[in-house]
Image (tube, helix red, strand yellow):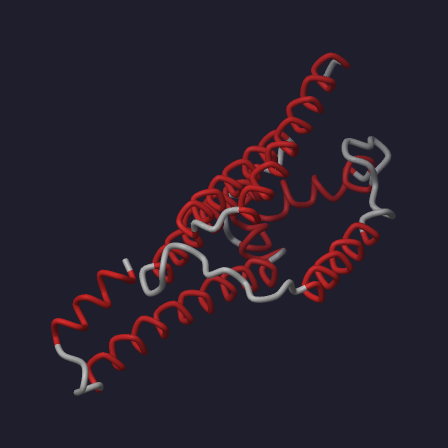
Length: 204
């Protein structure tokens, strides 16, 4: 791969990362929850594009399916049981901002000892035996002809299981809220059908 192609790839990645920052700022400042959800899906799509540019197609597929697909559907389902416009906050929550900044700083600090992107001397690039093991031994060890499937389902199976558990828990939370809301409306005899219909229209 020539130097010019590497420069173009780095420029593309930097442009996409800049777009991610712009989308995050938009999500923070918007009071329209529907627009924020749409921007959240756009964030996942841009992230998947970044992963494709970095030759991590399997991670890009997961990000697109979970982030832009399932997560957006769950958020839209949760939004259907609340108002579209966010209520103004009575006070500024500086503690939450501090926790977010400390968590982000800890995550960035944890990446300082990682090899640089595209480093030919990194373990993944210098040790060809690892890649050869997956390419030549995965079918015999796992019994799956597709190497990517064998890696996701077996070699890093706990990671895939964790991602699936997160999505499953989120779906249970949204479905629980939906069932609780309907049950409250059915069990409240003091609210007439007309008032219930008016409340539902206000929520949507």
